[in-house]
Length: 217
Image 1 (cartoon, rainbow, N blue to C red):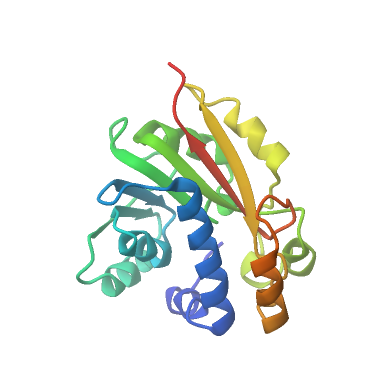
Image 2: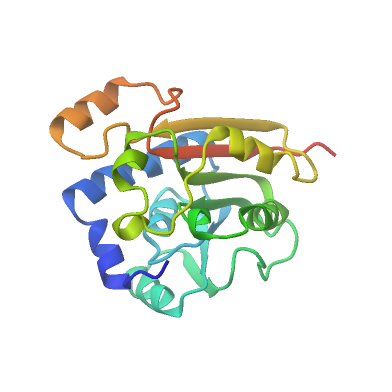
């Protein structure tokens, strides 16, 4: 799926986009609980919106994306931050094993035709663990947005499918956790109030966050 970088970034500055991105970033950081100063690879970073959020949380971030136009926009928006950007495909990362403390992929695997191949690469280059942000098939967002607009061509996953992906990782993860957010994706005041009261353990949020940590050796 090809996005115009300016339009892609503009969505994050809309009231709905700011709210959704804020909820997603907070959930991923809560699951990951990274140490300040640790390194993180953001795979499929696009215009770097979440790369910048991770950097603002105290991480040294490297963003990768195969689209040079997206990376041009990302670099322009990241002046003064501890950020680096590299053109690369998540399925063949140009980094040695265990190059980063953490890795993340925020709604980017949804557009990768070989998600397990990309997941193996993310696991290979991360030392402490990784967090995935996925589109949840078991959600109101799926019912309203499936194969429409910017979601056209995206794959929607659920926890059972992700568990099958994780089963092939070597060495095997020690910890696997999933939480969801964005239960009512219109982003209006009632949706925001309801979101604040619903626990992330419920499986029906439009954003499925998966945390994978540790290694069995």
